[in-house]
Amino acid sequence: MSQYNMIASTDEVTVVSEYVSMFKVRPDSYQSEADLESEFIKLLTTQGYEYLTIRNEDALVSNLRKQLELLNGLIFSDDEWDRFFIECIANTNEGIVEKTKKVQEDYVQLLKRDDGSTKNIYLIDKRNIHNNRLQVINQYEEFGGAHGTRYDVTVLVNGLPLVHIELKRRGVAIREAFNQINRYQRDSFLASSGLFEYVQIFIISNGTHTKYYSNTTRSAHIKEHNNSQRRKSKRTSNSFEFTSFWADASNRTIPDLMDFTKTFFAKHTLLNILTKYCVFTSEELLLVMRPYQIAATERILSRIRIATNYKKTGSVEAGGYIWHTTGSGKTLTSFKTAQLASALPDIDKVIFVVDRKDLDYQSMKEYDRFEKGAANGNTSTRVLHRQLENRNEKGNPHEYKIIVTTIQKLDIFVRKNKQHEIYKKHVVLIFDECHRSQFGEMHRAIT
Image 1 (cartoon, rainbow, N blue to C red):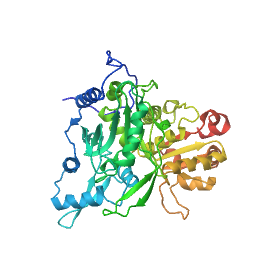
Image 2 (spheres, rainbow, N blue to C red):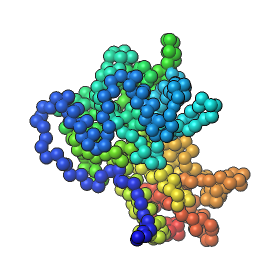
Image 3 (cartoon, one colour):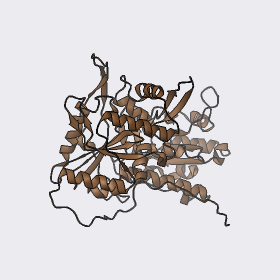
């Protein structure tokens, strides 16, 4: 039997390189909402989603229990489930911010077992994304809010409603779907056990145009003095300006709902977006990256992996550039790239290099906005030296995975330390504004 050595392995790309529509025949200008919904769900099921007829909260909670048991390989006793559900999932003192944090950061919760032991329970598996089960429900009825409500379509991930889709018939303005979701957020998502406050991404479509956006609602929590003492969220309005079209890697938009479904709702794409390409900021806002940002990030990570596997590090083949226009979210792209690159097993450090002293502080503020303490800035070359050697202010061991510094400080470090252990390490250098920083003696010395 032949033996093969793995050269490189990678997850499937999130943004399709080029998309050519498979749907040659489009409906007339009129297509009822019910027909559009039926067509949409049918396409999801052909892509591996399980369709469920769940119409009320009892059935939703029952399915959630079953899905978490499957994901975690255990069976809850009734008492264990009641405790876990009340304390960890539907805690009445928690609102949209806490629930978003559970999906994005605290997705491992602690179960108190009947025998007194504890066990980690995953709400979502972020390491092996295909361990997560995707289901789709429609026409779910919520009677606990200010008004009785029936939602269009919801995607469940391990039983939790993480993606909600609001549809309008072809010919109706897409903004109507957006306004409908705002009403749900105000009146009904927080009703009953508040499970719909776990929604991370909204999709709005009239069939012809389809857009997505994150649940970016700012929340100021207030205590309601009623029987449940449920903490509710006083919200400011989302802005329609933050909705985005999906696109392929060449940034050609994919507006039609069926084409959008074939690409955005491909299982690996949706799970990658939920587990890797959402950012819950230190200001408690949820951001979902745009397709060109995701494509740029994945191309950089691919170049790092290929350069490592083919021993091209330190050469031109191990580098590249990403060109984003002003205001297109370059800092978020660089932050997510640095974050994901620093988590690669072969990478020792990621150094984010800026070419002006005032940008050093600004970049730190931007990185801190995305994740407090994710990056470590330095006020002097001496501090940079210490961080590169993984020593804190007192000289004790401390790992600095992402460092923000200026090209001037890095140049001084290189010139004063011709021989240093860092040159034997695997380091990723990300240059901000490379059209200004990639020329001259300083860059040549660093290279």
